[in-house]
Picture: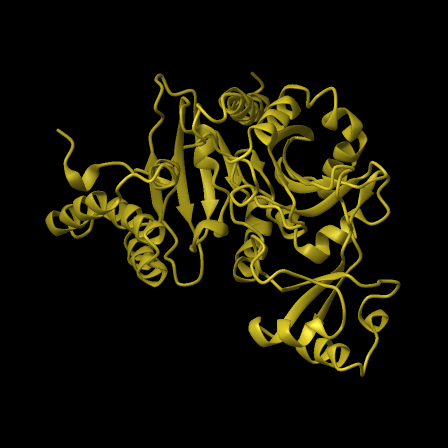
Length: 405
């Protein structure tokens, strides 16, 4: 009989789904604490408890619990839900919160793939041995905290004994300035002019002691300003005039910022449309489309749940993606894949009034899921399962090529 100390990881996808559907996590938190009372070295319970604490808004306690878990154990196992097992996937991950790693647990949640998570990072012991696996994948996302880890993985993963997806050098290229450099001049793609600057330069611009062109040549207001390494629109603001920068700097942390040209991408109806594209070995799939009257579109604050018309439009966009949006930007997606080179990538983008692909950002950590309620979004589950199937097929093809099967 399996004891509490030997239970596998519940995992990120299951726990986030429970939170998304507003299920009670307090009882689960108590259950995990009881497991640890009975088996204080149960690292799987520690790591699951860390995620529950994070979902309950207790970030510092979450990261502390995660730290205890990673000192006790570095490899975590999530068994395949479907038997027999057809593939064993080893994933390189780093410590941190939601944005630290690719949430690929959603992509294989209902599959015949065994998942091993290998945590690496400063102060984390290196395991003496690794589980047998068919394919490896780098899930460590590009950010300031992860760059040293990604750089350290470049050499060993270059000579790994199994196929490795999302090589770390290519993940590093998805920094905001790295992505802009990679896409510069690409036909059919607008990657707005971007520059890294500091608080002093922005303060001088706000006071009229400097010109915008001193920071971003050929740019004009409005511009977008955000702290370096901010994600999910955190402290991202559209600045229409230099005077607005003073108020922005008064409320935004950090000393280093990215400044980019704002591109108005409203449609003829005055609405903004943001597309989340999942690029799997160069083939594009639509993850979601948010529609809003606000220029900064996040799916959760877009007018999707309240608007049947918006949902109908998103459903049509998913059904007709290969003939419409995907077809219009097919060459752009091929160029994107050629220049960035990642096997799995999330692109958040829009479409300019002249019909070009407007890139907001691209990384490996955007969430792709099937958690939305089917009564409101009846078109989503089949679309998401198409994405999941493509991801799983990529893993299988990669393993088959390695064995010559």
